[in-house]
Image 1: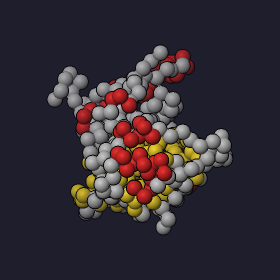
Image 2: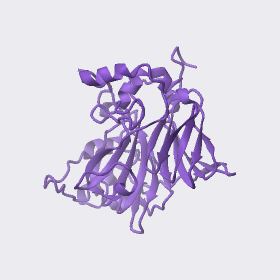
Image 3: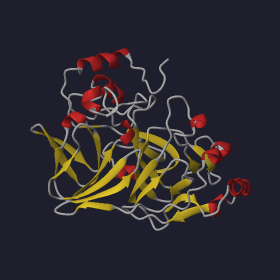
Image 4: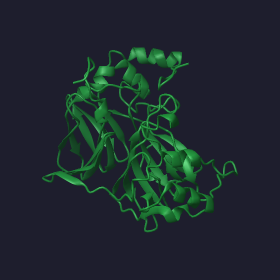
Length: 359
């Protein structure tokens, strides 16, 4: 049985992958993978081109996933239907360039979240919490870009000053946890970095784009007394693990202050810059460059539409689409078809190394 992010491929999938070995790489879009969540809604139907399942609350769309159980697949072109992990196995250097894959899989997981109700109050472990990580998993630092918010929407991020381990345990026991959490009303366009170890939640009509380390470990402290309508049961909590992974030195968090990197004719802002990833927002109607030489980047269109030009071909991208720019494509031109806004995601700096050794 494979471990550490390896993926079992069926014979037909392996045969399909072998057929694609000679296909030159290009900017590739992926189909979203919708996930039922009791706190979700139906707002993603307005954002993504793939239709939602017929019924039920959809809380997440996994837009770029190299998880063994949920593999993103290419939307179009000669590689249509190919899983992301197959892409990495067949074209490792063309996709990753000078970057390595220490865990054997793509290091980031990208999602859209529609949080109609309230997400559970939760904590993710850091890379240093090895005793709380499953085999092959990393910690989970994440960031949100708010795409839609209502006046009642809230983001909980961090603890109120002076909250101790004992205070947190007592608040969980007596049902007053929310009183110990820092909270603010998000606005459309806000970017919020949630380092691993941060107690957090969000919801009440907020839609966000999320970039995170490729980990699916969540420890719940409190779930607002919700009952899952599918099961009729409350979801399990992991209070001991959550408290063990909480960073009590971190106080209240607030939206990141965008750093301008260009304003004419296109507005380019650096929203998040951390060890695990970097994130920019680019807005305008004039052509601008995207991608980087020798490393992959990911584009997320959050408004408008356009096309990425590469080797005399144009690759369409419109609102809600996620596109991987393999390292081999280098720097490309993005040509908007009107006012457009895209996010550009850079992979963790720790993965940047020569395949023959550290640079």
